[in-house]
Amino acid sequence: MPETYVNVYDQIGEREDLINLVTSISPEETVTMSRLGRANAKSFKHDWLTQALAAADSANAIIDGASATFASSDYTARVSVTNYTQILRRVFSSSYSQEAIVQAGVSSEFANQRELKTKEVKRDANSALINQTSASGTSAVARRVNGVLAAITTNTRDGGGKALEQILYNDLLQSIWDQGGHPNVTYCGGFQKRVISNWTPQGGQRWTDAEGRKIINTIDTYSSDFGMQTILLERNQPAAQISLLEEKYWRIAWLRPLFYEELSKVGEQHRGSVVMELTLEYLAENSSGKITALATQ
Image (tube, rainbow, N blue to C red; front, side, top):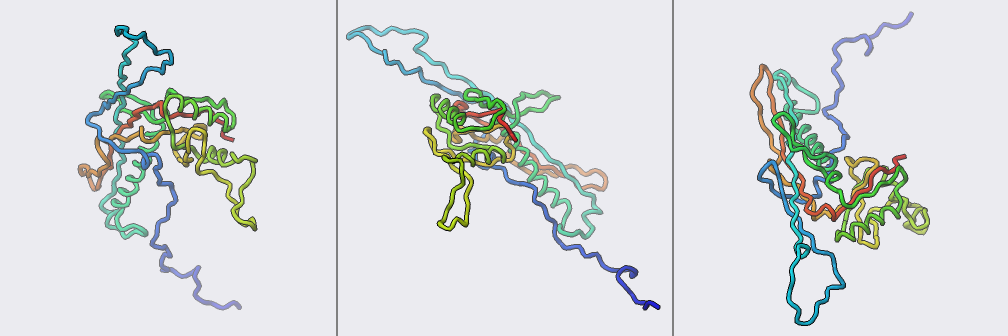
């Protein structure tokens, strides 16, 4: 006859074994937003001017004592460039009862949601600064910023669905150099970063010690005929595109830096939002370039 005893499957009242910790590995980095310079915007429509020099003329020679003559070609007009501010917002709320409940991992649901939404709106802004296309907006349509990829129009290359190769990359660098640019950073997603890391002279791996116990198979900087390029991983960069930026000509102009606002009470709810308004300055888009339509597998 089996013994009768109290066991964990029959007894009632055992406490929940829930640790006081919440784990998340969701990416939080905002590489582009963190690296670009800062400026101030004073209106939702943000403008700046560009100026170009006339082409060098080796035939510029005049007769001794000749009088000066003038032509329309002697003057190079400035060009006005416009971008629009984009308002980004994330809202959050918590019931008063939820705030009163003892919770694992957080002391306040409302405060925790505020922290999460702050991180999320920063990621939204980072993606917009790369991928968004311009819209001036109306009372019924939101304004949108012109991001890096849409802003670059002068120096572009189509990858034709093929793998990214050094010859195409260097061809773009030369095109930028011909315009007067000196890009210093290449932004790419994970797949294109791996492609670039395979650009070794012999197509092989690199050893760091005589025993060969450590292998480095990555390229973080690329020394080209047109300058040193830092290769950066950017999660919001489209998989089939890379961008080469001369970063000193790219700035984030803030109309309203990130701020928290408590919203009006509705029923038994505590409500809030985090908001920012910004635009992108590309003071000389022809200092940079992009390659599109690259293979991603």
